[in-house]
Length: 352
Image 1 (cartoon, one colour):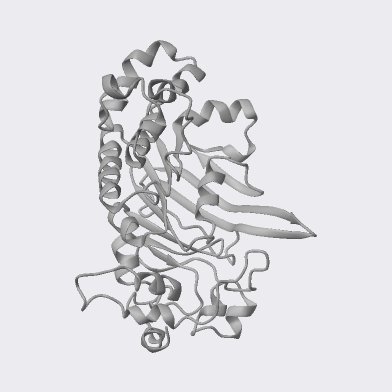
Image 2 (cartoon, one colour; image 1 turned 180 degrees about the horizontal axis):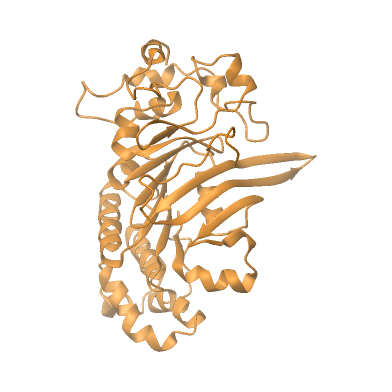
């Protein structure tokens, strides 16, 4: 990178904190015939620190789940790099990737369909050990992780997924992910298919498992309240790009990007004085563009009342607007020089 090129990565602050997962300029595209391409993820760059929970949030179709799968190389990204302890997963051979995968595990969105209906619970949880030549540890580790996620091994071991509720199946999925003792856990909408009361149980369980096993979490969700409560930092995605990243409370309480402000307005709050006017959600004009033909420049510009000609001509790069917060916007709601509300913030109050 030259002195004149912008630093577009959402880097970890402070620098001494260990970065275990580094995603650089990640691109995922899918050809759909007729010479057309779905631009699912376009140049996403993130650093994930050891021991943190990084939330990845955005509307349905923004590319957050695709980003999670691309980190896991399921499938491999179109371009870009995913470095785990310095090893670029995107360039590893199949054998090299296989060696790394036990340390990177994923919890999938639908807890029931992600489990083999013909297999017993002990087999579902224990199979990863057999695949990795650790079958001799099965009798010790399977009961241990089942108990850790709140399931009695003696009662559930011989049963099958269809005999359990969605919440219980998600506990089994978490146990299966933990049995290989991973360092990083990618959670793809892990509570979206569950009732609210069960969601709270699973979120508390993930927090407990994070502390018990020393996990680093990438938590993908569209429920902003859930992301805010569980995340240390939050990255906000819109149409395949990161538009803002920062500490969770700061991002939602003092958003720096107009799109983040729009999202924040949809979070229910008992503190009505602090809550953004909920009618703001109706003030963003237009529909979400198609990833088949994303807008030039800033992808949010077609819905943003602050958009100018520059927004159409020039793609905004992530830049720091206050300590720990980076935003990709030509007209951020925060003054980069002072960290205070910018002059356009008052306009946003009226126009968003």
